[in-house]
Structures are given as C-alpha cells and as structure tokens.
Amino acid sequence: MKIGDRLSAAWPITKAHLVPFAIALVVAILVGIVAAVTVIGTFVIFGPITCGMFSMCLKAARGQKPELGDLFSKFNGDTIIYGLIAMAPSLTGIGSLVTPGLLWGLWFMADKPMPWKDALNRNIEMLKKDWVTTLVFPFLIYLIGSLGSIACCIGIFVTYPLSLIAWALEYNETYAKGGSATPA
Image (spheres, rainbow, N blue to C red):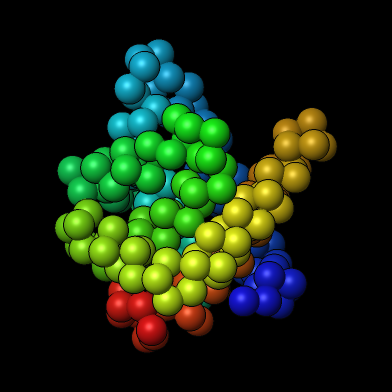
C-alpha cells in the first residue's frame, strides 16, 4: 500500500476524465439531496450510487471511458443491501473508521456482479488477511478526497475523483488480479 504512488498514478487519469467525474459528482450530490428528504433515502441510494462511482473509476483506471450512465448502472437489491450494511457503522461513533473499510465489497460488486453476501464475505476475508490496508487505505483516501471541500467545496471536484481513482488502482493491483473479484 503506497498511497503516494497510487495518487501519482491517478493524477493523469483524473485529468483525462475530470469532466465526466465532475458531472457525476454533481448528479450524485443532487440525488443525495433529493434522497435526504426521507430518513432512509440516503441509506438506500448510498450503495448503488457509490458502486456506480466505483465502476466509473475502475473503467478509467483500466483505460476505458467512464460515462455518466455508469453512475446508475449498479442500482439493484444487492448494492442497496450492501450499502445499508456498510453505512450501519456510521450510526455509531466509530463509523468514519469502519465504514471505509467495508466499502471494498462495493468495489467487488462494481467489478463483477455478485450477491451482497459474497461481497461481504470477501470483504471480511480481506479484513482477516490484512486489516491495516483494508481499513487504513480507504480511511486515508477519503480524508484526501475530503480535503477538496476546504477550498470552498470546489476542490472536491478534483480531490474526490483523484482519491477514488487511486483507490481503483489499489483495487486493481492488490485484489482484482486480472479483473477477477477474488482477493489475493
């Protein structure tokens, strides 16, 4: 896990796809605002929208063209259920430490359609093998992505895609093994 190396490799990819990611981020924020009208709405859309954004990042990291439609391509029962599970710790004081570590399952689901139980089991196996990388890498990536909000929230349109593409590169290198969603 070399965050600096991943961020350096992610920068040219981010620059090449900045506009589609900026548009996707605006759309995701707007969908989130609409969903927030209900108490459960944000929790329901979290998994599918996050998985869709991860799908865009995987495409970009693999030299493919990410499209806005990818943002909505993962709306299904499995991503909703997994999103609810991943968000559950956010209701506690440890949410910001645990939730990012549970998001690896959504990377598996973005890479290859699978039932939520399989994604959760693979995420648990990752935690057993290397809990530091599984928890610390995503936490630091989210911290870096959030730094953009300091610059009047405008910077997030660069830091968020940059951090997620760095995460996609980590996923590809460490866990995908040629596109397979099987952890090493």
